[in-house]
Every structure is written in C-alpha cells, then in structure tokens.
View 1: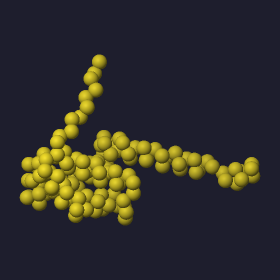
View 2: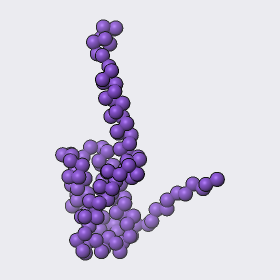
View 3: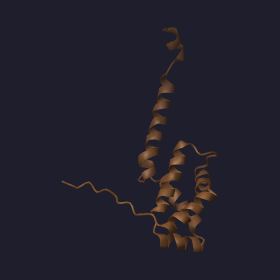
View 4: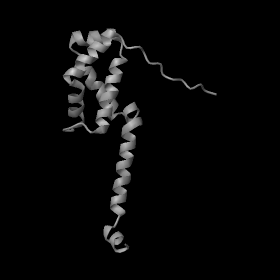
Length: 124
C-alpha cells in the first residue's frame, strides 16, 4: 500500500520574502498573466494563477532568486512559470482550477443549446 506523500513546504526566508515582495509591489506577475492570457482584466481564475506563481516564487531557492534578480532574468523566469502553469494540462493550475472551469463552460453551453425558453414559458 502506497503511503500518501505530502509535499513539505520549505520555510520562507527573509531574503526570499523581500524579493517576492518587490515583485508583488511592482505587480509584474499580474501584468504578465494579463499579457500571456490575453485578458484585459484579471478574472477569478487568473487571480488564482497569480497566487500560484507567487507561492512558487516563495518556494524557490533564495540563491536562485538572487541570481535571477542580479542577472535580469527574473522576468523571463516568471513568464516561463506562467506559461507552464497556464498551458500545461499537468500543472497544478490546470488540475485545480482550469479543468473545472473548462468543464463548467462546456456544460453551460450544452444547456444553453438545448434549452428552449419559449417552451419553458408556455408550460407555466
């Protein structure tokens, strides 16, 4: 019988928190999510994606965050994280949020295609 392996969260260091805090203040993640997903404003699902990205940044090794910040590669790193989360069917964002939203949209469109408001109105 397989043991349930729970992913251990790494403690967030002060340096990581400071770097991610600066990114949050500049709203870089929100702007990149909006650009990558072609949305003019952030809806609820994309706000969840933003939070997933911030969480992943906080769990990133401090040395890596410092290297990315000093080399100017942080923006590219965040873009790749967003693309991987948004477009991959194996990502936590897809598994937890987008899969449900896609399924709900499909069901809603099926209902609206088969629903006859005239028939419903006449049966009252």
